[in-house]
Image (cartoon, rainbow, N blue to C red; front, side):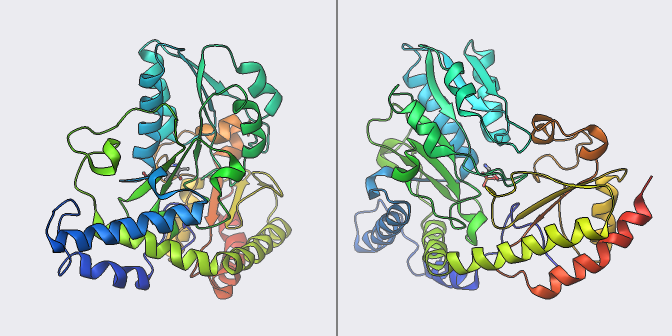
Length: 376
Ligand code: PMP
């Protein structure tokens, strides 16, 4: 029973099928001039047009890469380098993924000023606080579309109403939303938007970024003119074809899947607090991902709970996969000011395409006894 779709998703068998020919028969380098190369290039450009269409963008605005970590690093370093003569102040929300926080901290060590924007108890950025943090030195604002940890969706289109008139590029990490809820680059008014295929039933190690024309962002990898020079290196054609096929499947079924997952999620929200004492639901109540339920249990060690769940072949996590294993509560739980005794007993349940009613029922049946047994 897999409840860790936010960490990664299984590749849809239809995606695997679409990828196969690009490892064997149509294996050519998409930059090769012969007809086999042109076949690969056509597949690549079809995928680019498909992804662009899904996000409400133009094909030339999409850069394929290895995923959101790379996209986020590219965005931070690329904008900082490009605008270093204009200003050296960056604003990032304090609940961003580490692939934004760590490059920001690196830039801080290089002499940039970084504001880590606080959030409220639901994990939402406050627009007025953001507005007050902006200075004439601000060259980038980064706020994620939705939290990988507690599921809160940020008011991106309100944030861009602040950044757009001031001509400050807005970076939106949409890793948890693309393929799950509608993501439209003009509705959000993002300048750079990043995503990873493995979060929406595509393969790992491939993703992309949207870059609005005229956004001041330098190339990330140099040494070839692939991806319009933004990202040199032979493209991962099979991976990109898989990403595009995954988008096709999400385009067809995203609305129904979100409705179904929301019903499962709400059942967890209703039943778990009814059956277990000393539980808190984290994240925003309404503005949250349809597939994310995040709980904190008083006087329970989260890591022990994961182990007990694992023994029953129930796979979940405490928060982001990237911080589990560390004993400290995550930066996100700290940012929402969750008391330590609750933060240590956190459980993230994320749902997806193959979550079934019986999985939810089993979880609801098993969890109360497990919590009781683990209470200190
Ligand atoms: N941003 C967010 C919000 C994420 O959830 C993740 C994956 N945990 C990433 C960035 C990084 O994605 P990847 O590991 O595919 O590079």
